Length: 88
Image (cartoon, rainbow, N blue to C red):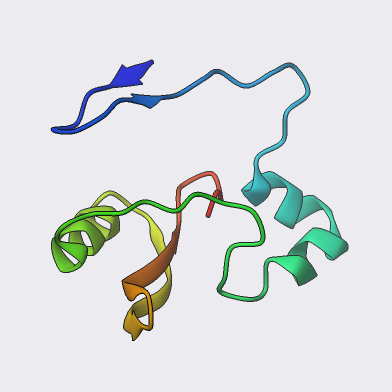
């Protein structure tokens, strides 16, 4: 699948056989549950957007789990979220 936002392209790939999403792994394994108990992304994706508040609202409406509220950091405004499959 390919998405074409205003600037750039986002490519999404299918899952290989045997793949377990972070949400599934969190349910099955205590070590994964412990690692995902913190709000930051151990591995994840960083996306730069012009309007952080609007992006955050769209993510919430789409079902994302908010891991942290919008905050001001030395490198800009940010929030942390997890998608429906547990990807951060």
